[in-house]
Length: 323
Ligand code: PBG
Image 1 (tube, rainbow, N blue to C red):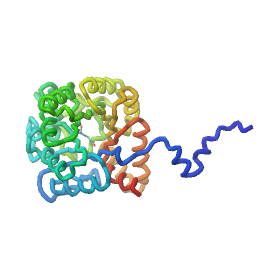
Image 2 (cartoon, rainbow, N blue to C red; image 1 turned 180 degrees about the horizontal axis):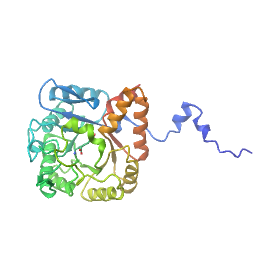
Image 3 (spheres, helix red, strand yellow; image 1 turned 90 degrees about the horizontal axis):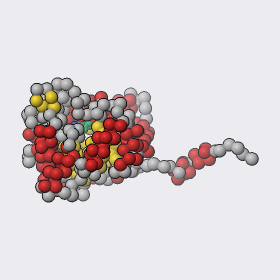
Image 4 (cartoon, rainbow, N blue to C red; image 1 turned 120 degrees about the vertical axis):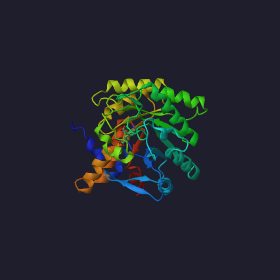
């Protein structure tokens, strides 16, 4: 009698391996983050994120054609405003850069699902995600501006809003404001488990949103804390979040897992800028196989429990999956 259990039987060749494969990355899981800015004919590559660009609106439309052609269903929009001020006016202005981009995107590609990042840090001259007074980031006064931002995105035609500021009570404030303005059908995807991470470095170059003093540790979570992430998520769920973001993704697989197990809501893993930059840099050196490592990283997020993946690799992945 053979006493050896032989799991290798199901690894014998690609046919059987693919039949018993437990998790997959589909193009329909992907959300592509994009950066829009004023100007014309501009497509500026972010130096720490090769292949990622800041687009003027005309170039943005051109890029969207590619997103749509590749079958990527959704984008997540970030804006780089003409000018910044202490109260982040550009975030909630009717003619702000994101509002314009949303209108254009929905006009040209009505079937594309447009999600907007709701935050103040790209629009404030101090670079913080809320209002600042005497060096402190104010919570409650920021809520009204965040809610206004979300409403202005919905008015422009956004399909979904994603608050990333980490102020307490923002999901409730945004939900209430959306409902009051007749946008009760617009879902809120909350960055519930958002950590104060070093992995956001390249994004701050892309969005021009680095804090001008201090850091974000008084509002974003401390990386060692898993139970606190469950608390933040429970609060957002109570306040009406429809989907949950865990961010970053690669070092936070346990948070993705726990969030999915505990709340059962759709979970999006945000494969952030620093995670992208690391893979790009190593691949450029010829030290790793980019495609293989990206697919392994992303399927790891799915295995941990993510339903959706927000990733700067979305277009590459769509191309690879097509082959
Ligand atoms: C804005 C925001 C950030 C990211 C998404 N929304 C930066 C930050 O919190 O400093 C990071 C995304 C990335 O690194 O890819 N609050």
